[in-house]
Image (cartoon, rainbow, N blue to C red; front, top):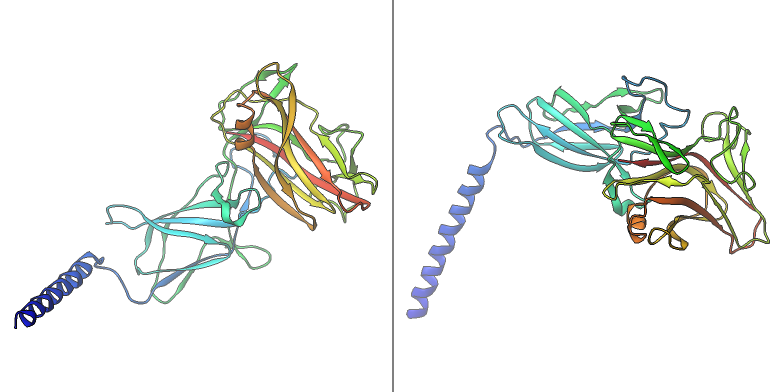
Length: 331
């Protein structure tokens, strides 16, 4: 009898808690929530010239590979923004609202170091902001405009940038812009010299081997060389240990390619070379965003360093490494 009464009380308590939970969930739903979603669709994001640019960007400066987007929406009448999530491009995302989106903020996301598991908001790209975006139940709203291939495309730009000038190891001029280009190389046919080792890095003007513009860099790796090292000849000077530090470039390679940094662990110390990452063989051009900040920290943020590349030819083949649109960015 006592067991029966206990079970009866538990049963009543369970029913009460269930009713309370349902009431809470129903009370927490938005009044304009719907059962059938509307959809937002986006194929890709391109990086374009800034409208306020005083001079055109160098050819190849705007090559990009925006892999995903983070989307945040705000509806008039809501108390706060709604994070819709991060989506790999192309994407079609369902939204359980049937009300025009007052503001839509889209953040470009890239694969840091080429690794899908480390997608990040790329700090050098501007947010994309849209207003009054229609959203209709069981209907798709395409974002942006259609390009020549029929893909729905939005555009972003680099944040304001300038090229840092260095003479005899000293920063000649400092701009108040957000992004500083510490080193760059585009291998254009009109160039007289390169920032790379001229004896190891050559220019090709073969249109079948160029990523963009009128030239690309090529390094010949002979079969009798298991390693071949080349570097950016200019010393890089960065005095801000809190800065973002990224190397961007386009590449394709017959052998593995290590990308790293050469510096000393303290001022006046002996220099050594450390690798940030190794790129795998690829027969197609790829865009890569390499985070050098962690490697720089291992050198105790020494303000002077160089960027070093090493072709790893363990198979002993006659191979080539192609580079283009190389730039080191600080923010």
